[in-house]
Length: 170
Image (cartoon, rainbow, N blue to C red; front, side, top):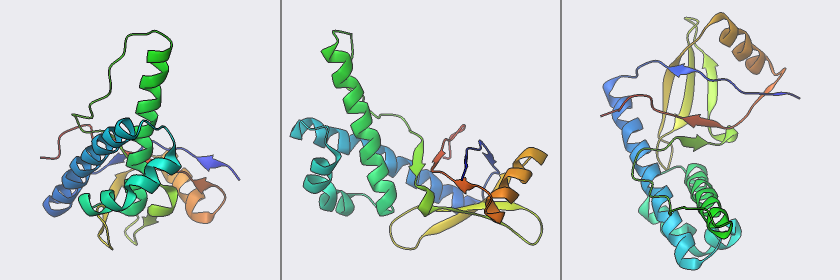
């Protein structure tokens, strides 16, 4: 079955959802930075080792859905591997800092897309640990509507998604 990749624009959410999204983005950035520090301290690029050594502490520190927290760890490991590879090949590089907002990776099993009775498409995803989720409307074109109907009908499957803010949420 084909996995569909769509780039869609989220319609501007209400103030409460906006605050939750902004907090999630900042928490995710901090989780990436912290995971990178831990990987460097442990001198590891192993997902299993980093997870084993840091997961419980990360759960205490960061109020994120557990799958999203693991995605932050994977993003940090990817950045660390890239840094080590460039250094090994003699190229100029510096350790990433994660000092600005980064796109939030959300696994395909952690979000859902629905069509409301009004015809509006919404995406529902977790913004913190526990059951805290928000639904945000999606701006759709005719092409997007067809692809979303294919997803809803089961003729293709959704992959993971990234939430990439184009403007500040604050």
